Amino acid sequence: MKQRTWPGRSDGSRFSSLPLSKANGSKQYLKPPTGKASPPSRQILFHSDGHDLSSLPYDVVAKIAGSFSLRNLRAASLVCKSWCEAFRPLREAMLFLRWGKRFKHGHGGVRPNLDKALDSFLKGADRGSSLAMVDAGLIYWELGHKDKAIGLYHRAASLGDPAGQCNLAISYLQGEPSNPKEAVKWLYKASLAGHVRAQYQLALCLHQGRVVDCNIQEAAKWYLKAAESGYLRAMYNVSLCYSFGEGLVHSHRQARKWMKRAADRGHSKAQFEHGLALFSEGEMMKAVVYLELATRAGERAAAHVKNVILQQLSATSRDRVMHLADNWRALPSSC
Image (cartoon, rainbow, N blue to C red; front, side, top):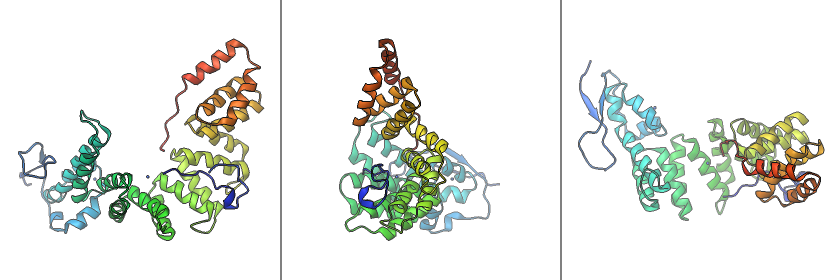
């Protein structure tokens, strides 16, 4: 699902040329994910107390710990006997989740098998794992079963899973018909929980003013939060906000800083614009490297400027910059 990174000309913005998912010696055992009883594989020791969590309805337990990681579930299961009993299905769910990822990506010595991956994720979802719900939803979405995907995203979102909330929101935005009001509601929930993609998508909605009233200051705030958490496209948009004084105080220094961060993490338009800035400052060698990277990523306009600069360099310098471009590796980002 390709997303724009900046409002386009039809959005009424003057930036039309800028381009815009965790006393008693009894023991409990964690069963492997077979769905049936099997010999014990791992021993868990605990002390009992008066908090009988296992007496709670399972939907309440799932609401409490449905989005826990396996590490957190194991830690919580060691607190007392009732917690160990209550979290047994969720521990099983995490094992199904692990096998699902193996089948989906062909890791751990197994061949990719989308049907087995989906089956594993659904077994994990049936045991209350919101993480498995999201992964099952992703497969359903890829297969075109969008209603089933949305149903799983909604279950995960209702359990407080930020990824489920974000995916649900995007599904509402892209649905036919769309449901902008519900989309923005879930984007806000996920954004407040720190989900960076949701923060970026919320910023886009606020910036474009299509789903909610246009609010550039609020949009810039969410762009910046996502960028500070490593979201690549948000870094580029933060640079533009600083450059044009849209939602953030105009700052050439901050604009250049965020543009370089985006460029160093592989954003092709940022590589092009950063290369142009270096060229204007006389940094020919550095400029050519970024322009070459942008050209390889499909920025056609970068090729023309690059070729003009290359004509001014010696053969040794040209070989040097091509070697630097060939060995360039993007810094990690969260997108």
